[in-house]
Image (cartoon, rainbow, N blue to C red; front, side):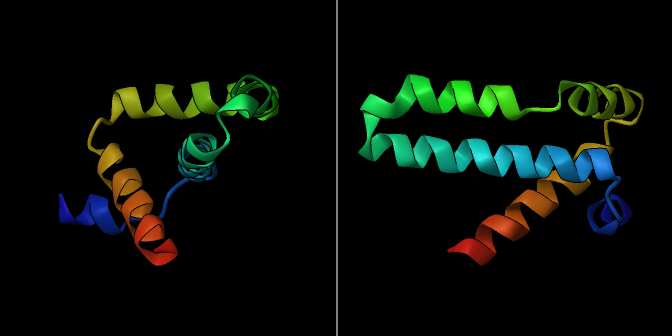
Length: 82
Protein backbone atom coordinates (compact mmCIF):
# COMPACT_ATOMS: atom_id res chain seq x y z
CA UNK A 1 0.00 0.00 0.00
CA UNK A 2 2.86 2.39 0.80
CA UNK A 3 4.37 1.77 -2.65
CA UNK A 4 1.07 2.80 -4.23
CA UNK A 5 1.11 6.05 -2.28
CA UNK A 6 4.48 7.17 -3.60
CA UNK A 7 4.36 5.79 -7.14
CA UNK A 8 4.52 8.00 -10.21
CA UNK A 9 1.09 8.60 -11.68
CA UNK A 10 0.37 8.03 -15.34
CA UNK A 11 -0.50 11.03 -17.50
CA UNK A 12 -4.17 10.04 -17.40
CA UNK A 13 -4.11 9.68 -13.63
CA UNK A 14 -2.52 13.12 -13.31
CA UNK A 15 -5.33 14.42 -15.51
CA UNK A 16 -7.87 12.97 -13.04
CA UNK A 17 -6.08 14.76 -10.20
CA UNK A 18 -6.13 18.06 -12.10
CA UNK A 19 -9.80 17.60 -12.96
CA UNK A 20 -10.67 16.89 -9.34
CA UNK A 21 -8.87 20.05 -8.24
CA UNK A 22 -10.66 22.11 -10.92
CA UNK A 23 -14.02 20.78 -9.74
CA UNK A 24 -13.11 21.52 -6.13
CA UNK A 25 -12.05 25.08 -7.01
CA UNK A 26 -15.22 25.61 -9.04
CA UNK A 27 -17.41 24.50 -6.15
CA UNK A 28 -15.62 26.86 -3.76
CA UNK A 29 -15.92 29.80 -6.18
CA UNK A 30 -19.59 29.14 -6.84
CA UNK A 31 -20.40 29.40 -3.16
CA UNK A 32 -19.51 33.09 -3.47
CA UNK A 33 -21.10 33.56 -6.93
CA UNK A 34 -23.97 31.06 -7.26
CA UNK A 35 -25.40 32.94 -10.26
CA UNK A 36 -22.48 31.75 -12.39
CA UNK A 37 -23.12 28.09 -11.61
CA UNK A 38 -24.68 26.81 -14.82
CA UNK A 39 -22.30 28.71 -17.07
CA UNK A 40 -19.18 27.63 -15.16
CA UNK A 41 -20.24 23.96 -15.00
CA UNK A 42 -20.94 24.00 -18.75
CA UNK A 43 -17.50 25.50 -19.42
CA UNK A 44 -15.79 22.86 -17.31
CA UNK A 45 -17.83 20.05 -18.85
CA UNK A 46 -16.88 21.22 -22.34
CA UNK A 47 -13.18 21.25 -21.44
CA UNK A 48 -13.04 17.69 -20.05
CA UNK A 49 -11.23 15.08 -22.13
CA UNK A 50 -13.65 12.21 -21.54
CA UNK A 51 -11.43 9.77 -23.43
CA UNK A 52 -8.63 10.31 -20.93
CA UNK A 53 -11.01 10.03 -17.99
CA UNK A 54 -12.49 6.77 -19.29
CA UNK A 55 -9.05 5.35 -20.02
CA UNK A 56 -7.84 6.17 -16.49
CA UNK A 57 -10.95 4.73 -14.90
CA UNK A 58 -10.67 1.54 -16.96
CA UNK A 59 -7.07 1.15 -15.86
CA UNK A 60 -7.98 1.72 -12.22
CA UNK A 61 -10.77 -0.85 -12.41
CA UNK A 62 -8.05 -3.43 -13.01
CA UNK A 63 -5.93 -2.08 -10.16
CA UNK A 64 -8.15 -0.50 -7.48
CA UNK A 65 -5.16 0.10 -5.20
CA UNK A 66 -4.00 2.59 -7.81
CA UNK A 67 -6.50 5.03 -6.29
CA UNK A 68 -4.22 5.33 -3.26
CA UNK A 69 -1.63 7.19 -5.34
CA UNK A 70 -4.28 9.47 -6.81
CA UNK A 71 -5.78 10.31 -3.41
CA UNK A 72 -2.31 10.90 -2.04
CA UNK A 73 -1.47 13.34 -4.83
CA UNK A 74 -4.78 15.18 -4.40
CA UNK A 75 -4.17 15.54 -0.66
CA UNK A 76 -0.61 16.70 -1.25
CA UNK A 77 -1.63 19.38 -3.75
CA UNK A 78 -4.61 20.46 -1.67
CA UNK A 79 -2.37 20.86 1.39
CA UNK A 80 0.16 22.92 -0.64
CA UNK A 81 -2.62 25.29 -1.75
CA UNK A 82 -3.70 26.12 1.79
